[in-house]
Image 1 (cartoon, rainbow, N blue to C red):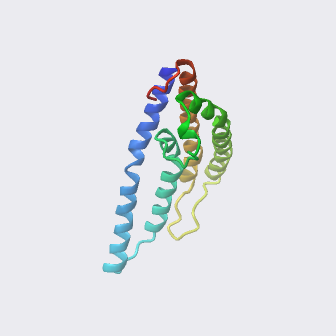
Image 2: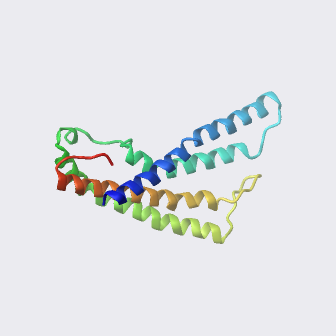
Image 3: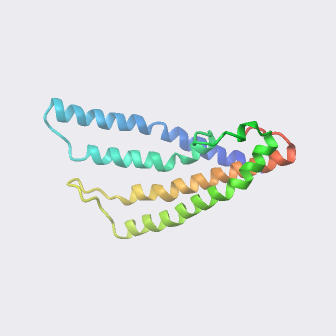
Length: 168
């Protein structure tokens, strides 16, 4: 179980390292558009749309890293007072919610992306890019979230067995 947790955590960490560059990419695109539009009077037809696409991929695929780093909103009123074992029990009880959410997102997101790919769906803008690569981020992000949820579930089981939380 520990090896599985380490592998999933490594996948999540690598994904987080890649995604940390997306805000910088967004900044460059937006600054480029501002300079082109306001200072050179030569607006682009692609900058707004690609910035939306980059932001969408960032948002959709960063859930697993946020889950690993405990960055999601949490109701800590009682949870923080629990022992490590109590927290593990609470996490195990709530795991089906993550499993269900990520599973449905993976299943429906895959259908959504596959249909878009089969139709070679394009944006309706003047630039007219393919949109299926962005839609493919939905099942990819859901799979990452599901994997990270499983890693945390396994860590909670180990906490129940060992009695204390070890680093995930």
